[in-house]
Length: 145
Image (tube, rainbow, N blue to C red):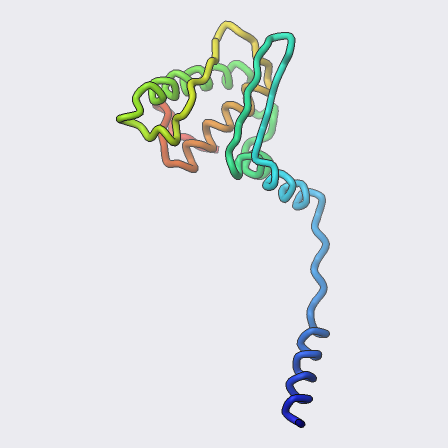
């Protein structure tokens, strides 16, 4: 009987000694929320375009690792996106050579349309995320942050 009480006392002591959890900062809470949401949708009715990115972990990576908005110029992003889209679309058309699970759909990105900074920024960062995550290389540039 004494051994049962002793075990109960040890359990109560262990439970009562539990330290309090530190409060999360606003940034950590935002990162947790972005991990839960795996879809990025960007649309503009005036230009009739829509980009939907469904990729687990991309939102968290965009919020925590990618360069901040304004770091790149829109022209830089447009040039890189155009090159990445060309390579991406070529890989979509060659499912025997490239993994069709990675390259499922073509991207209709036209260089003569001004998609705006936000679309170009998120598309560019998706390409960087994709290359780093899946160890792919879309073009002559080494993907880096």
